[in-house]
Length: 148
Image 1 (cartoon, rainbow, N blue to C red):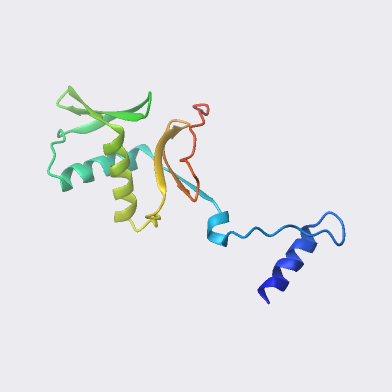
Image 2 (image 1 turned 45 degrees about the vertical axis):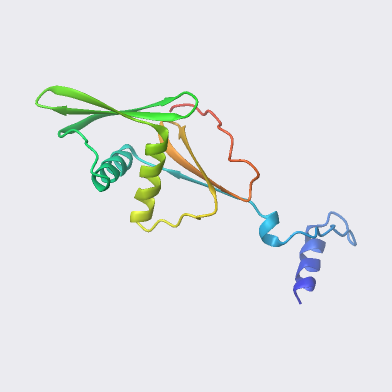
């Protein structure tokens, strides 16, 4: 029955009647590739960072977050500016910590993430983006897009 379904799909997709496609010997899982992008708001990124720091008992300054900026240079780093009583305090967040915070944020909100996948962090249109690839030989490449 499964073979019949493939034959009907092949015939429906064929440019000419009677044309057949070669069916590779790979399993369906090995042939399919998946790419997911999760784009985070600035508020979600700050929440992810503060939640992770709290869990690990790492210091994070008290006050109001006044800015969040990303730097893309051989990876993505973030700078969070926290202001308290007119005094600004900047906290640099390296890429590994930022990525771990975003993965933890997704997990704590029951966003399904495949365990066996490559996860990479990018900034697309000014937003932190977690790119998840499955069954690729390499992680997805960075594509620089405009900042609208």
